[in-house]
Image 1 (tube, rainbow, N blue to C red):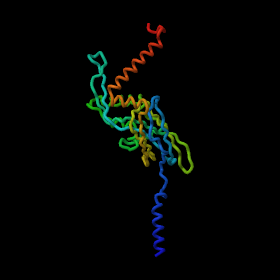
Image 2 (spheres, rainbow, N blue to C red):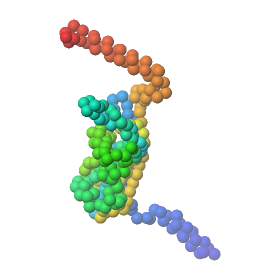
Image 3 (tube, rainbow, N blue to C red):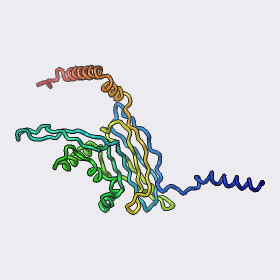
Image 4 (cartoon, rainbow, N blue to C red):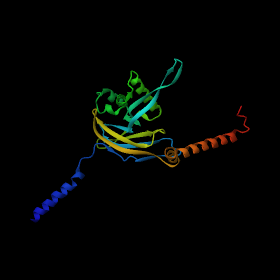
Length: 258
């Protein structure tokens, strides 16, 4: 009886420790920051993503925001003379941010992928195909391209070969990618993802939530603007008046008013 119970205890201990004996995860990512604060002097920042993976693999790092509808005015000529805002168009499934970082020359891999390939779906070309325009017209494709150009100019959308590798022992390598957080990024919750690719196939992935939040003076202004509109208007007027008075004092007698 004693041997029987001893055997049962050994089996129980083996099962309890089994999770500790599992193979090493192929894609390992160091802990990312959970929060970025937008303060008074905020002008963008960087988030470093590091980790390790097998030496014969590649990694793609991506940061995206939630998708939503976006309404914009379409310009056109009035009476064939003046360019003015005319029609309103609605873009559907537009991410708040789309920042993709790849290894050097990985664009060649994207070009070899089929249209429905999971790897290709991570890229900007696939995003362009997912965004729709309402009302639909022959100009829809052109409008989407122009929207992407606008987002890229603002720094909110970007594709960069900014993933760098360093060799390690044991058939593995280290990777590092610096995500550039643009100044115009709106407060919210964003997703940071890493995808390990072997032979054109995604074999492992990692995701993490990153909160971008207003702090100090920008937070106060935001609360006033959305919750106390009248007070915000008065404050904005006072700031404009004070700025005007300071400008007048600085240039008084400077003969800069001619």
